[in-house]
Length: 211
Image (cartoon, rainbow, N blue to C red; front, side, top):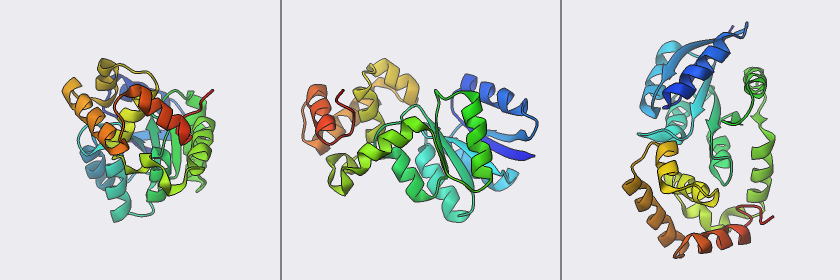
């Protein structure tokens, strides 16, 4: 039996994934967390075989939670799940030691395949993320987007996906005011003034596909 710790701040998503995974014969969800802090705490209590970690959570966030867990227990197997499949986030997670990355839009079969692959010690990346990471690798460390923090990166990606402020607020569990704060911070770091300039810069550095 593969024991899973599931971390996701959205109750409906969390409940749905838990029910679907518990219906699989060789998988059991042994703990659920609603924040990065809870994930770190439960990881030491329930001894999961694999942690399914939502990257976009309030508090310390999934990226920092992964970092803290892997610092204390480097052999922990983690699969990141996220709505943000572009940009450097997957690459940052793999550098930390995360073994898998699955889009929230992936079908259940793919998530189960990822769990079994990681359980066997193999890395797993959904094809969408693989293609985006190839593009990002072309940029090297000189890309101006490497200056952005995790939250700034998430906001930048969602802007490039055409999401509105209310949509971003809901997806990242942050207030409209906080989203705008991150927006203007990333503008300053990238030396741009608006979303149009952000898009042009993203295309220039292969941060998104221009097609």
